[in-house]
Length: 631
Ligand SMILES: CCCCCCCC/C=C\CCCCC/C=C/C(=O)SCCNC(=O)CCNC(=O)[C@H](O)C(C)(C)COP(=O)(O)OP(=O)(O)OC[C@H]1O[C@@H](n2cnc3c(N)ncnc32)[C@H](O)[C@@H]1OP(=O)(O)O
Ligand SMILES: Cc1cc2nc3c(=O)[nH]c(=O)nc-3n(C[C@H](O)[C@H](O)[C@H](O)COP(=O)(O)OP(=O)(O)OC[C@H]3O[C@@H](n4cnc5c(N)ncnc54)[C@H](O)[C@@H]3O)c2cc1C
Image (cartoon, rainbow, N blue to C red):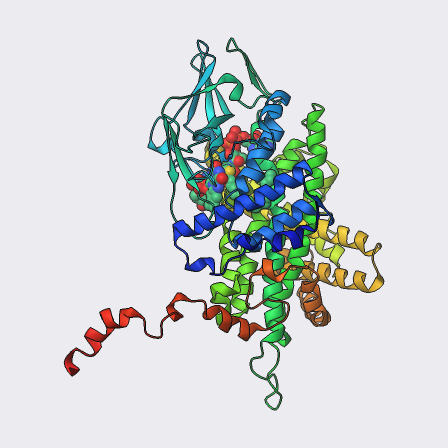
């Protein structure tokens, strides 16, 4: 059968709610979501097997983005599709993949790493997998309460299998963290297997359809061949064959961090679409007292809140793709046995995941506030987008913890620079900074990029000097590191911002040569706006570390305001160009037709509190008090 994915999925009635999901209980929400998740999974399986074919070209992306509208929250199979399958594909041996990656597999899986007691510091994970050579099995065990797995999406009720991160023990020796496939529920009855204690962790700020769960093992046995064995092996006699790099086991986190950057770009484009369209419809106060009320989008302060969101969505789209391509390249190298580029990719993924999630959640919240009171309505969809986006600051590597990973990388290069050793080209600016080869400030995108590099160098130097000072004062390295950690994260954040500015500007300039002149102008305006915005936000740092002057900053401010005015006529067109369907946007404020007030009233009429003209609580609780003395 030939289908157009958007139309096909939009026409499956069971996927679309009559009652907004906010009115459902926790349990009903999950049940509603799981019903839809399996309809979507069936479509994906049919696409995979070729039973249905598509006439549009971006199928998985289409299905993925339509999901936002279908679930309004999260697909409970997100981790099954996104992490469980991809980890098997990346880390299981060819034979294991052939066995486990069947499109009609009975396994519904999840990725089980975090424990009650340990999330960031994964070396502290306490779940054990002990090899028993007499039976050729691993024994999975949860030694204490803090070792209970806690958080994995889909674990609460949906999954019947999981990939578990556990400490591998062979003959009393611990070989560190490894990944094991474990069945946890019966495929037919779905009852937990003997030795498995599993359940759901309860309501959260968002992600409420994802049935995040807990899991404990009581000496649960799995075959030896259930350890993921592409990069590392345990042989029948208990021989341990080491991986080529001991962090290959962490590969799924790396891949997800890279993927997330693009997902956050998409969340930003949704928030921007809602807030910009609403701002074009909403009128509030005249600018001059004798004029009619103006679209709130005409207030320059409103443009300041919104245009940076549009620009940031483009930044993360561009940088997300750039990182995706880097990941592909590095993975191909690793395949050939060359691990050389892995540390750089890890350092980039850490700081970019941290900053993209932090920016995205701050900007989504800014969009919500920019919609005034109506942005506070669930029907605007902005609260849900915020709850979804802010979770990304924590999961898949907490913000500060990831920035500190990148700081390790920066400090290594600063040490080389300080010791006058050769540096790779992309860190040559460290040497320039040490030699005080400062460029004369230029009020241009290229000048701002240089200025941001000077900030990275200056902040890395400050953190490094503090670290050295702590060491000279007799602190051990880890303690000295902790004492310098505020400065270290600052350096990392600056590094991420300089990367974002440089990659976005260069890619935009390149893209501009391939599109029409009028489009190129708008794209460059957006890119310039992004750079100017951050130069002004960080003008204190620029004053500290670059050659910028007060006059330069004033000139930047004027150019920034000029850019807001230039972008204003294209603002609605720019968000329309994100091409997000109303069914996906799910927002009374952001629909394409601009019927904001009509839609708000239509949504309010769905409130169960409006079902009866007089709610029974009046008779039960209100009247007895208010009428008591009047009878
Ligand atoms: C794939 C598709 C996915 C689909 C996504 C679609 C879009 C997404 C939309 C929604 C997604 C929602 C999903 C939510 C699911 C959430 C899942 C999770 O949260 S899973 C759990 C994630 N947990 C973490 O991220 C834990 C964070 N902690 C760590 O990663 C590590 O502990 C650490 C902080 C990095 C440190 O590790 P450790 O202590 O073991 O390291 P050290 O021994 O100190 O060594 C550090 C050296 O190792 C290098 N390193 C560390 N990690 C890596 C890596 N991944 N790759 C390469 N190198 C690594 C590090 O650089 C150090 O090197 P040196 O400095 O010593 O040279
Ligand atoms: C919505 C959601 C979905 C999730 N899904 C999954 C999943 O599918 N599978 C899974 O395994 N896990 C999942 N997680 C868990 C997630 O990966 C962890 O919560 C995350 O890695 C952070 O770890 P933590 O909760 O232990 O925080 P902690 O590490 O306890 O952090 C608490 C605070 O301590 C600070 N801190 C910790 N260590 C350091 C340090 N070394 N230096 C400086 N500061 C530090 C942090 O900055 C933070 O401020 C999910 C979490 C959420 C919120």
